[in-house]
Amino acid sequence: MRRDRTEYLKQWRKDHKEYHRDYMRLWTKKNPDNVIRHNKNSGVKRIAFKGKRLLLKEDPRIGICQLCGAVRGMDCKKTHMHHIKYHPDDPLKDTIEVCGKCHRRQHKIWSST
Image (cartoon, rainbow, N blue to C red; front, top):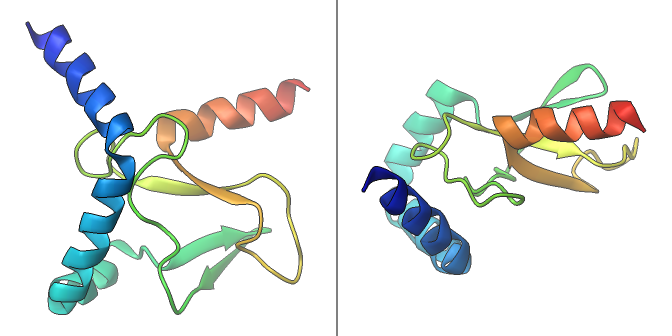
């Protein structure tokens, strides 16, 4: 039973990715105090770029892994911004948001090629 429920939830998240993203954006607008408190505690506006930590005005993350559809807080603890290609003038160009599992997998793929 547990496995069936897990598979169902994974498929539901894949099918409703845009709905969840829109819902989270709407919730963020309606609850700015909670978002500010959350951002202070978790540092979601920080990204690592070429060995440095950058602070951003807007949060580039939406809380969903772009590879497997895992939702932050439900399927994974946090998400990471993975740079596919580095651009010195724009740190967010060619980045994807991934869960920890997919992030490790991406680094294994890139290091083996």
